[in-house]
Image (cartoon, rainbow, N blue to C red):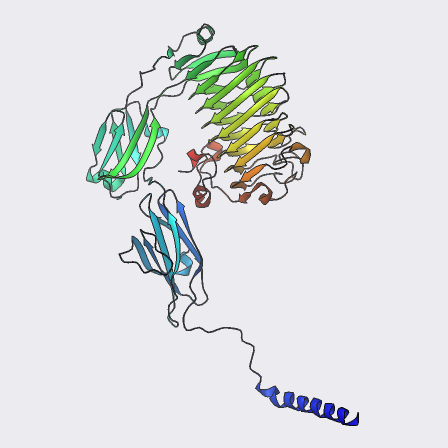
Length: 521
């Protein structure tokens, strides 16, 4: 026992002596690793902006002083060396220049981008690579009302872009560009006309009694309304299928460089859409279809609803396409009856200035409703609760822009979406929400995305690729985080929202194709 204790004491003493002897020779803590070359840039991302423009970004490795970026019109595998010249390249890119934007490339092309880091004191990094594909090229600027007259259209594009001519249909026009037009990026095309081909439709001219003509029409009749005039509907009772349209000439214009298309736009002539005042009552009858195209529906600030049902009525299909709807008091659609509603579609519309005093926007409190689909549509300035769907409806909002919606200061403002019909299905995708809710009432339950769990009967709603910005109370109800509605917070940078110009300047929102597409180019 004594021997064992002596051995332990000797071992401990040796260890102490060893530590003491080495204490002055311990290496300092390694705070920085030195390599023979720079690390390659990471998180390399390529975003396609405005169809054929690229935006490149990456994380900067420690010690990098500059970068070289090369873009090839092919699909290089990782590690492969390119065999031809790059479609675009640049050396000496400084860190403060990132992200690198506005790189113009060809449309509909698969590209490989690779980036390399450089430093004066270290060997350059290896390449890092990313693949992406551009969309159909669009070098023509959007055509604005100010670009149009009754017989001409003025087109704009990037000055100095390699282009040769412009074609326009109908009319089979080929305009060869002058050197001055190429340099300035502007040309005026003449020869526009007004459509006179109405097919089997009946033309309604200013001064005609539109109500008498519609009442006398056969089942399934089609009408075309002359532009630049206002027609009074009153509260028109729909008792048969009818299609009412304005048919402006739709032109397709193509900017070309030889056989290559540099941009394509469609537009309508300069004639103003006809204005219909009043509302549509789905009367006491079974109506197969009501279709409205390219019209302005104006409530004059005194008409309560745009579409309202009568007791016992049935409407199998309501389609509203390319219309502007404005200046109503309360509802876009109102039903509080034992009404049967089939499929309702709003597409490519602008719906604005409906304050919502005394009712909700899409206000369905009874009856049956099969489906509601709203796509490529803008809602601005109005509504108490935006959607009140208390029946088992399949509801879809896709690629819509919402600006100052559900902003009526009233305790009955349940916010944007009140979907509490048993068996309802609900989807919101690719939508943009800006300044929704009641600004003067922070922290209240008014203006929420959805007020509470009882207001969302679909327990597995579909949300994806949405954006929100500067919304009041949006996330103060059932959904309390942006991720719950699959939304990203970002300023769209509207050009002039008070003037109804919701053109988006945020490259990420444009790249993600969020909101009404008319504002993304």
